[in-house]
Image 1: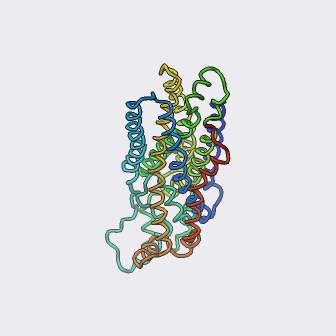
Image 2: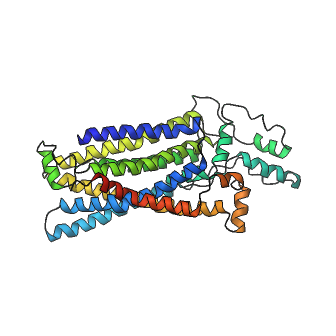
Image 3: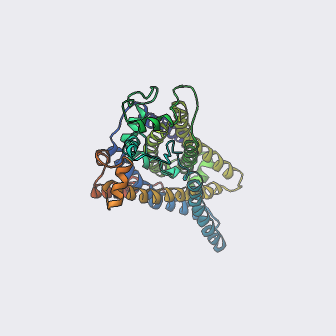
Amino acid sequence: MGFARLVTLAGAMFLATLLAGAAPLFVHLSPRTLNAVSELSVGILVGAALSIILPEGVAAVFENSPHDGRGHEDNATWIGAALLSGFLVMYLIDSVHGHDEYPDPDPQPHLHPRHRHSHSHSHSHRPNLHATPSHLAELEPLRTSGEYRRDDEHWGHHPHHDADEAGGAASSRSRSPMPCNDAHLLTADASSISTVVGMLTHSLADGISLGASSLPLSAAAVHALAGGSDEGGDGASSPLQLVIFVAVMLHKAPTAFALSSLLLSSPATSRAFTRRAVALFALAAPLGALATYALLSLLGAHGGEGSTAGWWTGLALVFSGGTFLFVATHAVREQEKRAEEQGGGGGGGHEHAHAHGGGGGEGDEGRIGERHRLALVLTGMVAPALLSRLVGHGH
C-alpha cells in the first residue's frame, strides 16, 4: 500500500509539474498570482522543514537506534551530519550552477550619443537576465514576466515588427542571436543548460523527501510491515507523506512555470530544448522518490534488523530538511530583495528598475503589498503543521 500510494503521488506530481511548465507556452498568467503562489510556497517550505520533516526525521533516528548512551551520542552526530549535508549540497549546486550569466549579445562598447536613447529603448524588448541562483530561478521571471511574454511572441516569427525603429536599435538586433525556428532542433546557451542542471538536481532532492516519507518510521511499524502486516505500517507515514507532497507541489508548480518562462526568454534556446527540459524537471522528483524508496528498502532488508530501514529513513528526512532550509532561507531573502526593487525603495534602486524595464506598470502589476506578502508567508509557515494535525499522526 505504501509503494502504491507513492507511485500514485509521483504520477500526480509529474503530470501537475508538466502542465505548470507547459503553461507559458499557451497561456498568460497574472504576475500577481505567480508572486502570491511564490510567497506562499516560501512559507510552506520553512514550515514543512521546521515543524514536520526535521522533527519526524530526528524522532525516527532515535526511535530506531540501539537504546544505550553510545547510540544516542552517535545519533546526534549522524543527525548533524545529515542536516549539514543537505544544506551543503544545495549550497554547492547554487555556487556551481547559479552564477552563470547570459552573454550580452549587444555589449555596445562605443555608442554615439545620438543612439543612446534608441539603445536603451531596445533593451525593453530583451529580457534582463542577471545571474540567477539555479534553485531560485522562479524568482527572476516573476519580476519581468511582461518582458518574457513579449519575447515569447517572437517565437517562430521573423522580428520584422520593429523594423521602423532607430538605426542603433536595428544594428543592435542584427548582432543579437536569432531565435531558433526549427521546432525539432535542440539548441541552448551555456547559462540555460547550467540552470536546467541545477534545477534538476534540486528536483531530485525534493524526491528524496517524498520517497523517505513513504516508508514507515516507527520501529513497530517497520516490524509490522516486515511481518507481512499492513496494519500500522502504511498509516505511520501517510500524514507526513501528504504534507511533504503538498509542500513540494506548491513549490514545484511555480518553479516549473518560471523555468519554462526563463528558457523561452533566451533567444539562443529553442522551444524543443525548453519542452525537453520541462519534461525532465517534471520527471526528476518522481524518479528521485522511487529511487529513494527502493534504496532505503534495500538498506533495511540487508541490515539484519527491522529498525534499520526506519533509522536510514530518519536520516534521509533530516537530509531533505537541510535542502528545504537552504532553499527556503534564500528564497525569503530573494523575495524581500525583489519586493524592495518593485517598491522603488531608494533612488538608485528605482532608477535601476526603470533602466532594465522592471519599473513602471509591469512592476506594479505583479507587486504584492507588504502586509499581503507577510500574511502569505506566515500562512505558509503554519499550514504544514495544521495539515498534519488535521490528517492525524500515525504515532
